[in-house]
Length: 163
Image 1 (spheres, rainbow, N blue to C red):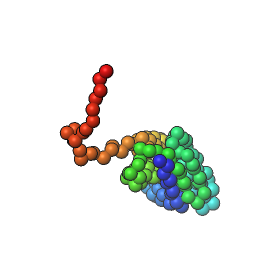
Image 2: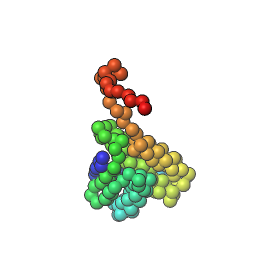
Image 3: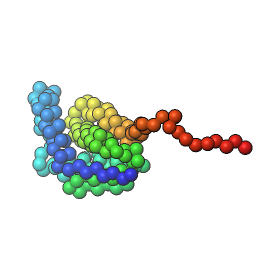
């Protein structure tokens, strides 16, 4: 079963911008000033953010390579995943899968941006990336149990022939 997951690129970009903005307002540099200018990316740096986001998504997709049959990063991030394990539970699995992808991307970009000026803060995001990736892998390999039957062994018919 092939399933398509489509995520609006601007949604991912906005999630990254919001996270960096929140960090910038709350983190302080060695002089005690907010680190906003050193953490947030200006509109002139949007291309750099897009490069970081694409690198994050490509790394994420690479970890799922055995199941991803298609990937495109135009205005939307589009994945096609061949996974018979998700049959009948698409929404209950794909929604948290998308959340883990976005969380991974945010952590990846935060790690890259913080690594320039605040390497000690960047380490936290390495573990966040690992946690999001591991959670997504668990979702990919989640097996939906078959529905239980209303019949019992007494309903079974047939014969056994022993030679």
